[in-house]
Image (cartoon, rainbow, N blue to C red; front, side):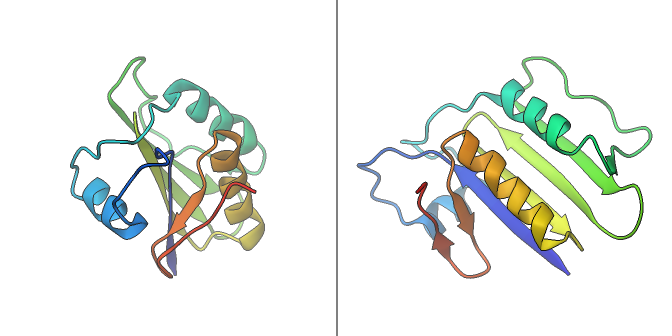
Length: 130
């Protein structure tokens, strides 16, 4: 089973619903009112938090410095589970495949560390930071 987790920081005056923002981001559109994300720091946090028990697929290129977007994958070293991080300057999405709940929560914690609350499109719910 796959599960999609999406994250961004938006201004308090944003008039679009989380679902509208999510759909625009999925379509590759610019969404005014989203804050700039520290892409290199987010990548570093994923690499740090998923260094043990996970691996990057052989042959997947490392992200280029100052790239406008990054796509990276991780898979469990043993057992089931994989996910793909898609990161841009304004949002990131993690597509999870057979990932355990504790690891999904680790991903949510990374989002929270960068003030990016989770938007869960499966239930159309944007959670708060606190």
